[in-house]
Amino acid sequence: MNAKRLFVTAILGSFLASIVPLPALAATKTSVQRLRAMQHQLDVLKHKYDVQERQIKRLERLVLRAHGHLAVAKAKPTAPAQPAPAPAVARAAAPAPASQPVAAAPPAPAASSLGKPAPQTSSEKSIYEQQNALFHHGITLTPGIAYTYADNRFFTLNGFLALGAIFLGNVNVSRQENSLVIPSLTANYGATNRLQFDMTVPYVERASLYSSVGAQNSSALASEKRFFAGGLGDISTGFYYQLRQPRLDSPSVILNMHLAVPTGRSPYGVKIVQDPANSSLSYPTRLPTGQGVYTVSAGATMIKAVDPAILFGGFNYYHSIPGHFGDISVNAGQVQPGTVAPGDAYSATFGTAFALNDRMSLTFSFQDTMVGPTRVHPNGLQWQSIAGSEINAGVLNIGTTYAINRRVSWQALLGIGLTQDAPNMTLNLRFPENY
Image (cartoon, rainbow, N blue to C red; front, side):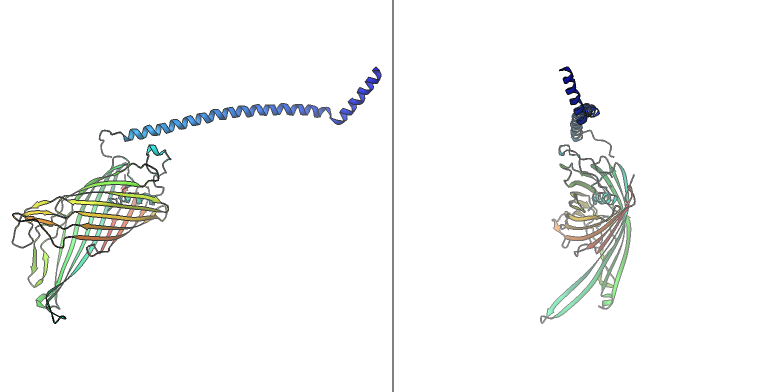
């Protein structure tokens, strides 16, 4: 039996060895151990990942909480600090202010109200500066020069029609031309990234031509008078304040308020005389360089980037404070003291701008200014309105900006008059530089 059992065992061992070799069995055992080791490593990595994910979420909560505390701290009123800033019609806001652009700000929750992302290119920056929608800490100096040309032709008929078609009387044709060159210097100072103070000092140089037919009582001959004047204009000062935005995609809203001081030569009390050689020609004895009264203005500007354009619009209200003068008469040889109240003015502007590349941009806008009638109150008499003193001036503006670098840019704005009261042409060149 033992011999038989040994024989059967030997046969079975030979059969199993032929089917599953011993090295294969050892390899299978090794693979199982390796799989278990890999499973253990996977479990360890999963545990580490869970721990890191909890740490990341905790840090995110801390960062959001810190943003919320920062927004609350900025919203609290603080003691007035020393003013410390660039854009206009912009001052510009100017542009504008006006009006402009710096790396994008990181996104933040709406509750923090951190404001808009900064413009990406220098050309967009210049547009925001023109509309006074991008402030700089420090000083911005803007030398500039403006040229304005306007002319008017007046036809006066003094007589009556005979037989419905024949005019009997005098026909007078007169012409008036005015050219103004106004160099100016504007200083902006940013107290914060939302508050900016500014002051503009202009110098007015003007030339006027008055001409009329009727010299020597002849309708074929004309006489003319030329006048030149120069002097300090009205200095203006004020501030721009940018409201906090509820969302990052909301438009920027900039409030402004300014005061113009009558440092220029007053236009009241200027005498109008007739040319001795031509009774049809009248002209003033001197030319003014200012408005003669204090003027307070307030308004708001909105600007929003809508790729690839930037839209902007604004409204301003101007109130001239009535002033008393020792002489308001235009008649030679007559002195009449009294009070003058220039009419209030309303100005609306809207337009769009395009960044042509990272340095140059193009701007199109329309501005309409309506001025109420001027009223005078001679001493001892009643208030009366000056006929023809109402103004409606519509101007189409075409502008361009070129950013030399992040600190210096060139701005040019061409205005084309669309109404009779508007100047024929205005050209405004500005060269802001941030310090």
